[in-house]
Amino acid sequence: MSDAPKRNPVARVLMGVLGFQLVLGGLLFVGDLQNGFSLPRLGPKSPNLSEPVRPGDQTRRFSPSRSVPNSGEPLPERLTLTVVSGGAGILLEGEIAGGDAPRILKQIEELPTPPTRAILNSPGGSVQDALELGRALRLAGLETEMRDGDICYSACPYLLAAGTKRSVPETAFVGVHQHYFGENTLLPAFVAVEDIQRGQGLVMRYLDEMGIDPLVMQHALVTPPDDIYVLLPEELVRYKFIAALPQ
Image (cartoon, rainbow, N blue to C red; front, side, top):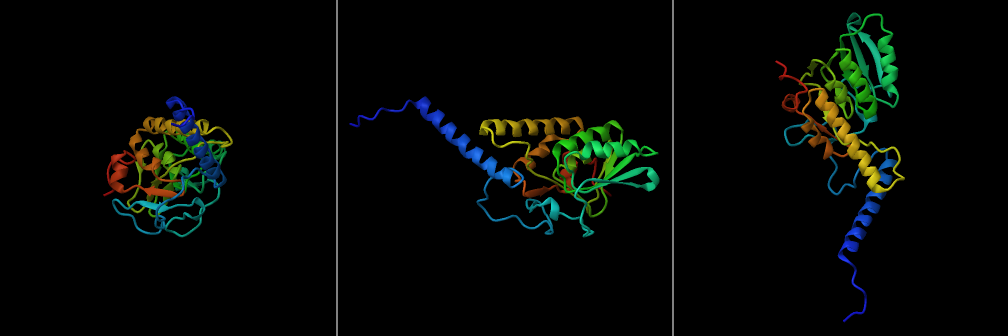
């Protein structure tokens, strides 16, 4: 019989938890270096965004800088505002960068005629700015819409959700995926995970406030940041982004 002392079961559990936290912390740190938290891939890469989606095959490779509408024109690196429809509408195009919400809101306030609708064409970006800008659009009573062939990925659907009325043609593309909320991954893993969970909770609360079914997050939570899950038109109806399919 071995004379080695037996380890207490509780101690074994604690050691296992500590080991998991160290591994997860390492993954978070590597993810931060890659501008986002992403677990290692074990399977084949997803198809390109240019490939058509169909039910059950809706996950595509994603990079904000490489996501362009069907027009083929690259989008601005920061969210830009263009007045359209004689001042009744604003076109919000480009990536949503940190600080874009207060900048765009200031531009809206300075318009001679308050707009009634916002047209979206964006690969997403900063979640916090999207939520801040979205709440302001709802408070101002703006409708949101998309044009044929345009995109609304990542954090952009939160702007879409803000509309008092929302319109998405079948030829436009709306997609969701995991977001990265941590600002400093040089923290214990449990703190970083806590930060991610808190961020997801804020997003789900926001969606509920906007009348969107938070169950749409089931697709976002299982889709890595370097992929995008493209919602089908019937899913846009199911999760209440739009009232009915376009006729």
